[in-house]
Length: 324
Image 1 (cartoon, rainbow, N blue to C red):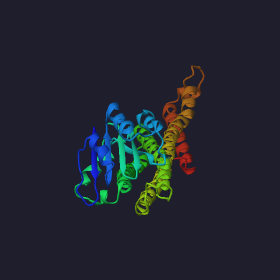
Image 2 (image 1 turned 135 degrees about the horizontal axis):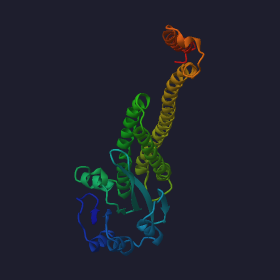
Image 3 (image 1 turned 180 degrees about the horizontal axis):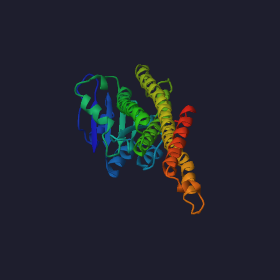
Image 4 (image 1 turned 30 degrees about the vertical axis):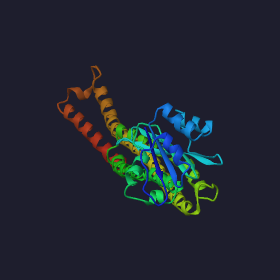
């Protein structure tokens, strides 16, 4: 799908333009926003190559099916930005990343989003009618708004991870199970995925917030710096969460080891107590003719008394040594 809108100065936006009308609008005052959302290859080429004549390497990056690291390329007349949005299922079994490509020029912004997931640009489309600031300050400010929306979607995910970690800490200490270990590893994988995205994306925003690109004026650079600050804070949060999850994993392993040790201690005490009893029972179970105790009426009760005295003495000794 292709959505094209032209924002003339001091006038209402012109929505749903055709490609031919978009070519004419590029020659007019104001700026143009072309949003490619799950487009076909023909639609993409008609815009990126036919209308704007972007560099083939940038177009190739858009079509790439592999993971593209967040980056920014300067092509003099425009800059090409790769950013990432994140989407997760409720149980973090699968944390998905969606690539967002942006071409920013002085009088245009082209956004390309190919994944079949909620697009960060959709929220901006919904805000256009009620927030004129999105297009009053040029294409660079609109680019900021899209990137800001993308980064803002990280925060609910981070908060959800924190809640999950808090709940896991109680489970790890009270009743650790193999499902607990699986949950810890899922959260660890989710945090590592977020960190892998944020680190290069923070560098992209750092470059956009400096006086490096002519497509971004001084007014908008301040807002890009604000996104950069958010990413720094989110990265610090993920570092803390990673350490907490690593600590929970250690606690889980230590807790399961401790529980195993308690079980082995109980079994060892039982085995140790029955060892001398088995010896005594074995002695009196031998088939010898001359065993004086066997002919006495008090022999059987005496043997049970010795059994009881031996077991009680060993329990008292273990208790005194604080072995249980």
